[in-house]
Amino acid sequence: MGGDRLKIVLSLTPPLLIIGTLFFGGILYGFLQSLGYQPAIQKYDISFDAYYNVMFSERYAKLFWTGLGLNLWVSFVSTFLAAAFALFGALTIRKTFFAKKICNFIFSLNLPMPHLVVAVGMIFVFSQSGLLARFFTQIGFIASPSEFPILVKDKYGLGIILAYIWKEAAFFFIILMSVLQSLGENFEELAQSLGANKWQRFRYVILPLVMPNLFSASIIVFAFSFGAYEVPAILGVNYPQMLPVMAFEFFLNPDLNARSEGMALSMIIALIVMILVVIYFRLTQSKIRKD
Image (cartoon, rainbow, N blue to C red):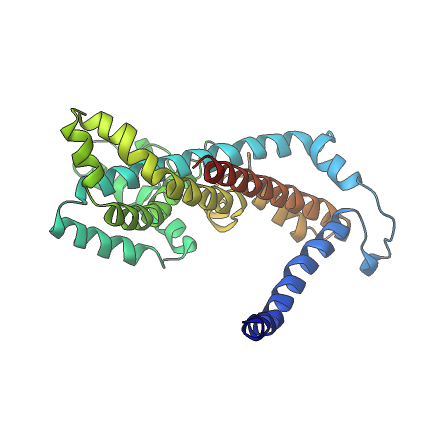
């Protein structure tokens, strides 16, 4: 038995060392750069000036806090609506064999589609010069495409939210369908035999059973949407900017001194995501102990 464990440890050690070195090495190097350590431009002094400049300086403070607010708004709303839409869809079609097959097929096609493609598709369909605006103009619903609501490149991030809902709902749907199929209908039938109506069966039977998986998926989606760059870069506006876009612009700055501010923003994003992960594990462990 001990020999088998040793073989497992030895077989896992090389890939774990590579992954750990690349991950933690990248985090350490980024943290050092955020503190101003940049040997390439002869900067060796360590300080938290970049963090202060990003969050509290007159030049960047407003950009940072509005960007953080937009980040939280977009990530929370898109995650919540994608989860709600997927849950409603899964509960609606789970007993219908034909519809279930079709939806599983459609969502399976959606999963591997890159977010970049989804963002470009949003522009083609939902912009004021897109397909929907031209269609409504042709049928006389609006007088010109310019009257179509601004759904992409708007300051509230509606286009970004729509893109994430369309993309991440498939992820939620696949998870929820697998959970609901594994649970069966025995719990609901038992609750119904005790006099529970549809809402009570959903509230007290289905939701508690799917909530652990739904919550786990929500943490993943929220963390991804909080730190993603491509969709906000394509569908967002110049102000307010989401934090990943703002960080990347620091890296594009010809002045290499701005790298420290860019890394500071990246570290802040990573810290927020890590806090979410820690909260998730704490809640999960407390749930396990209660059970």
